Image (tube, rainbow over the protein chains, first blue to last red):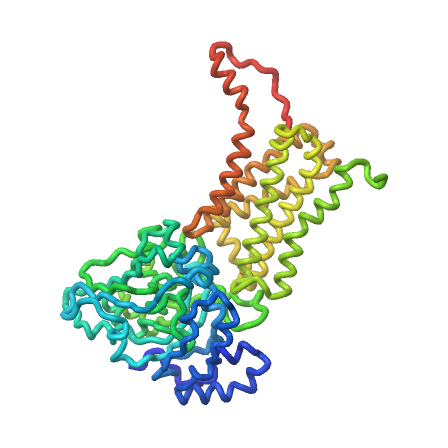
Length: 332
Length: 215
């Protein structure tokens, strides 16, 4: 299945991060960037200088990944800069300000890492992250990322389709939902002292949502390992849902029969539903979801960032059928 | 110094410049492109915070006079109040023209549907008559009604802190701090002496002479 494939969009329309860091050279270098993407060696073209320039970055952000597949999921939208994508994060375990995670996640240790697979599946147990990822070649996908707060980004994620991983554990017929849990490490996550949310963070998907080809497990972004502030070493990306569904630093994946509870829904049930599909027609009780402010590109970006939000964040063609017959106002 | 009548008058230009500092700082950061990843949110947040701080500062003048005996402090109040109005207006303008931009007409729907926008907008509206009647001439013309009208500032400050509280997603500590300051300033205004004396002598009906509005 080639969902999200846009044959009319050339690889050159996704600008490698290193290139638009320096706008003056964009035109000159676009040709090179395209060549790199096609050859599948684009990651080598993205030197770590951009990240190393800021001392507060976690070291993990500098490690390049080997990407086997690129260019199938691309977007015409200009991407968000690496700097913005890694310095504007909602990751409350590291603090509630969006600049906190980049500053306070330095002590977090994303390795060694293990993930527990539990519940209704033929294969369960605790596995090292290496073992979990080994059979899967890494793929890069450029997705829109829409935060429930009304801003959005365009980010190239590196990782594997969630379904490919889940199928290896052979979920049984009783597995109606998949429940995810974030690591619980207050000693390395200073924001956990605050008690603004119930820790550890938990999230969930219906099994057919989890098995959808767009659902993605990221281990990197922009061809590098995930920085701590972006959810290292393993996080969920569900591009047609609001960003908070993309649970970070996953330590447990459980196949369950009943709809699992989710952190933001526990915190404010009227405001955050289980589904939380991006939907411009259903307002958040406190703000409109009709439009969003896109954080992308470089340079001076005060004006003209507001765009209309698309149903299912622009992925309606691929995912709307998952919700046929459902009242999306009720199941928000 | 002969240029000024007294020290308060002499210090006013300094206070004026101080009140402009947050704006200058904001303009500087904007020109340096130093407002971070989401510059629009930064502009909104910082203008809103300074509006609220200045508004609370005007509410602190009366307690300050009573506690310290520095009665002349009242002469700074109009300037602080007008700057509060100025920053609220900039705040609204940023929201309307920079944040909403081409979708500015959405503001009507937002005012109708979103409680934090409703109260924020109401706070700005209520400040308009206060700003308009802030001149000496209007004070004289309105006489006692001026004091009554300017009691609206309590409602405005309440709406302002509610606006902050309701827009925050989860970490309510900062807006709660502002609410605490507002509550303290309001509690201080309760007629504590009267209340306690009423407790001690409950029998005689309260037949005070009509109260004069003092501040």
